[in-house]
Structure formats: C-alpha cells, structure tokens
Image (cartoon, rainbow, N blue to C red; front, top):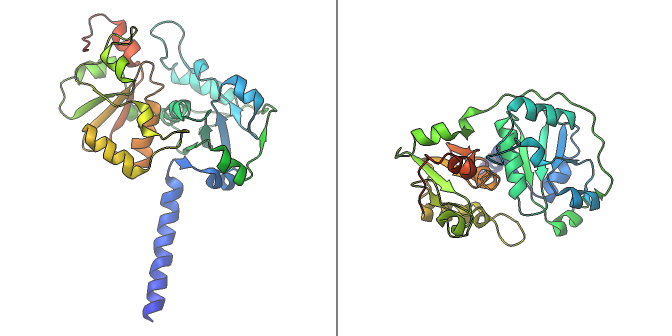
Length: 285
C-alpha cells in the first residue's frame, strides 16, 4: 500500500510538472520536433535573409525585423501595433498561433521577436535554441526553399504592462522600486566607444551576452539568478531593460519574464536612441 501511494504521488507530480515545463518559453531540439507536428504551430525565422536562403527549418517563415520598425530617427522604434499586425498577418502569422522563434544562433534577434509578439498579445511564444548538433540528432528537417505562407488574420491586443516610453522613464527615474538595466556593452554604457553618449541616469549595466554561453546556448537558470543577484537585479523590483534600439533588451526580457517568472519586467522600446534624441534628457557617463 505504501509503495502504491508513493507511485501515485510520483504520477501526480509528473502530471503537474509536464504542463509547467511546456509553459516554459525555451525549446530544445527534441521539444521542437514534437511541437512542430501541431498544425497550429508557426515557426518564425529571424535569420538574416542570406542565411535563410542557404538553410532554414522546414515551413519556417522569414520575418525581417527592420520591416517592423519606423523609418527615420530615432532608429529602431517599433511601428504602431496596427502596422505590425498587418505585416505579420500578411506573412501568415496569427495571434492565435503557437509561435516558435529562432535566429542565426545567439538568440539576440529571437529575443527581440519574442518581446514584439508578447507585446502584440500573442499568448504562446517559444524560443528555439539553435544547436546544429542537437538538430541533427533530432533529425529536424532543413531546407533552402522559401516557405509560401497564406495570409492570416492577426488581431493586435497590446500588452502595455511590458512596454514603457520616454514619458514613463522620465516619471520613474527616481523611483526606488524601478531598476533600469542597460543591456549594451560596457563601453557603450560608459560612453567610451566613440558613438554612445552614455546611459540613462541611475541605470546599471548587464550586457545581454552574459545570459548565454559560447555558441548561443543560454546559461542555466541557477547561473542566471546568481548573476542577477550579484548585479542587484531582484524580482521585487520593476525591471526595465533597454539598449541602443531595444533589440538587445529582448533576450534579457525573455529570460526574466519567461524562464524565471519575474513579475514586473518591461522594455523601453525607444531605448537609448530615443532617450538621447531629446537633448533635454539627462545622460550619465
């Protein structure tokens, strides 16, 4: 009887564990191979167009991130939601799809696409790590043939809780409960690279590359939490990531919000380009 209860307990634990693992936003090759069989799954490649033409996941739709940003200065700002929704729908993506995103390997552009989709209101978004050895072992099919996707209906339902603008940043510069995190390289943060003017006052620096290992595979959750704690980035704060154009802010946002379940994580989409565009905004070095 005792053994029966123990087995029953293990079964219950497993049943609760499986949904929680599936809910995680990170896929490995084996997880992707299973999920890709679902007809509601759409795969987005944010590889460069050149690399996409050479080889990509079968049925992957190539999305140009630059096509989702406004023209002119400040550079890199996301277009209005209606325009983004139109573009995605025209490329066969619906807000009701389960969407799996991958890039050329370091997850920088996949992270940006992840944040855009979550901001646009897509409930189920995953990132697939590019590990060619694991892909070959899982026999994931690749092709150079472009995917022809039929138009879909994408209804935007923007999530304002993960987005901040310049007005919000100004209002919260001295808010002790808000932590601004600059995801750029240290020289950009310090304004010593010859291009960057510096950083938002009070922001701390944690480069986006520190979330991954060599080859683009992410560090373990334990390693990342230790890194965040050492930097003073704790889950009790509202954490706002930014970089030059918000591209590099996407991966840190993904890790904290999806893998670590930090409750209040946002992206400053206008980023340093937008902040420095107005000479009245203060800048530190």
